Amino acid sequence: MAAPASVCDSLVSVGLPVRNGGATLESAIKSVLTQDHERLELVISDNASTDDTETICRDLAASDSRVRYHRQERNIGLVANIAQTIHLANGAFFRWISDDDWLAPQYVSSCLKAFSNDSRLILVTTQINYIKPDGTTHTRLYSGTSLSSNDPIERFYAVTSYLVDGMPVDPLYGLMRKAKVISIGRTRGKMIREDAVFATQLALIGPWGHVPELLANRHLGCERLPVLARRLGVPVWQAYMPFYLQCRETLRCIETGNYTPAQRRKARFAVGRMYMRLHYDKVSYRMRKLAQIFAAV
Image (cartoon, rainbow, N blue to C red; front, side, top):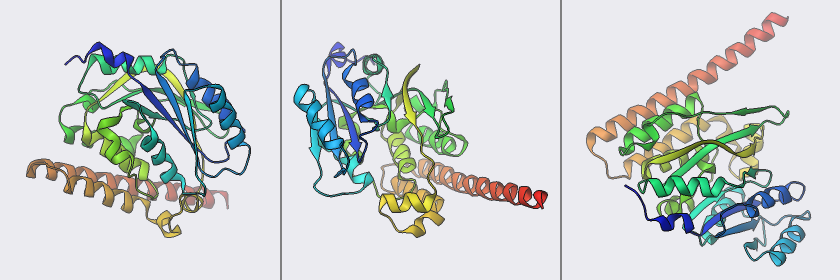
């Protein structure tokens, strides 16, 4: 079960995809470069920014050899730029960070310790402090065991449930074993709720570990789905059927995998259950809104 001690000495890559993040970028970069883990590289993929992002990044790259800066000549889209960072990374382990996020100094070393203790793991998550647009914060707690199971369908079933009830961990912002996730990390699809599909793919690949410590901050956005569709570069009609698209792509992950008939049945049931619950929650939300409107008349 235990991995060699060299895991804790591995090169770790942190990928920072950015477009016009000059106002917040320096704080995020500083939190990466002040990690107590020495073997580190920061890979920045600048998606043709038009603000001072390029100047900030080039200055940092010139002053710190751990910073690798790559600039796209044109806007290649949000998801493609995210995928570009893992494509450019050299480390055995990889994590994404947004331009307004923050990592505690011991983030990388704490996650590597978890990898060192369990060689099965393809991903290690931590507690994250989420900051909403209005400034309020919340932290999600996780104490379960299903995500560390050796059974891929048990992990898959757990994630599809969490995607309805609220994910207690954030797999997209955890430390990953790059060799295990590179095949899906480089080919992330361009669609609304792509991140949810990616989370279920990660669950199928291998067990996850968790460090029950608050080691990161993330700022949450609040975009209407048609606005998000335009930013992703996908047809606006996707904004009106995001759950169908999510469940369709999730089912494809199962159909292309090497699973027994019983495992496929359980996985299909999990996706069907997720689809029904997502729509129930959506309809319930709309009914509550209508009730509030009529009550105010």
